[in-house]
Length: 243
Ligand SMILES: [Cu+2]
Image 1 (cartoon, rainbow, N blue to C red):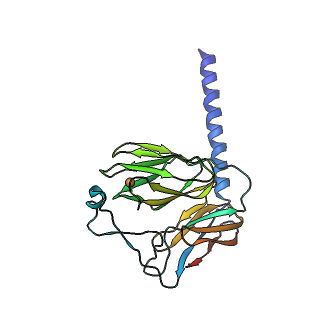
Image 2 (cartoon, rainbow, N blue to C red):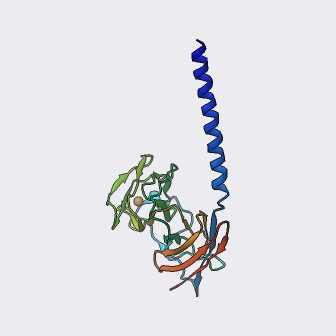
Image 3 (cartoon, rainbow, N blue to C red):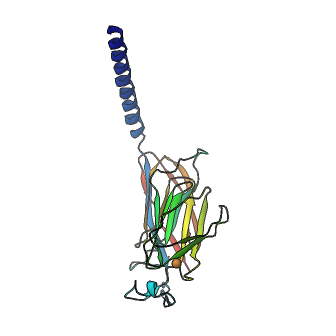
C-alpha cells in the first residue's frame, strides 16, 4: 500500500514539474512578440455602380428580398475602401507545414447569395456549408488545383467540405440560380485576411521576417508588395486597385 502511495506521489510530482516547465516555455514564446501588418485596400477612381440582379425565376429567392439584389463583384465603401479582397503572405515563410485550425469556416447560402461573398480558409480546414433558404441550392466550386465537386443541398441539409491545396481563389456557383457567385480562397498558412466593407484588413501574430504580401480581387487581379517586420512591430501596408 505504501509503495503505491509513493508511486502516486512521484507521479504527481512529475506532473507538477511538467506543467511548470510547459508554463515557462509558454511565457518564453510569448516574449518573442509577434508582429502584425494592417492597412486598407483602396479603389482608385469612380467605383462602378452595382447592377441589379433579376431573381424572379425563383419566387423563394425573390421573397427573401424587399429591395433588389445587386452584383457584388466590386464593392467600394463610402470612403473608397475595397471590400472582399484576400490579403495573404504569399512568400517568406519557412517551408513548415501549418495545421488547419480546429474551428470550421462557415459558408452560408442566404437570400440566394453566398455569405460571405469571399471566404478565406486554410487548406484542409473544414468548411460548414449551410443552406438557410427555403429553396434548394446546388453548390458547385470549380477549382484548378483541388478536386471539383457538385452537391445539391436542400434547406437544412448539413454539408462539410475542405480543400487540400492552396488556391486563390476557387470560384463557387449555384447550378440552380445562375446569379449566385462567390469565391473560396484556400491558403496554406494562417496569415491571411479578407478586407471588410471599409477595405480594412489585419494580419496578426506574424513571426518576425521579410514577406511578400499579395492582395487578390476577383475582378481587378492581384497586387504584390514586400515588407519586413521585426519582433513586436505593427506595420501599415495599403493596397490600391483601379479598373
Ligand atoms: Cu442556388
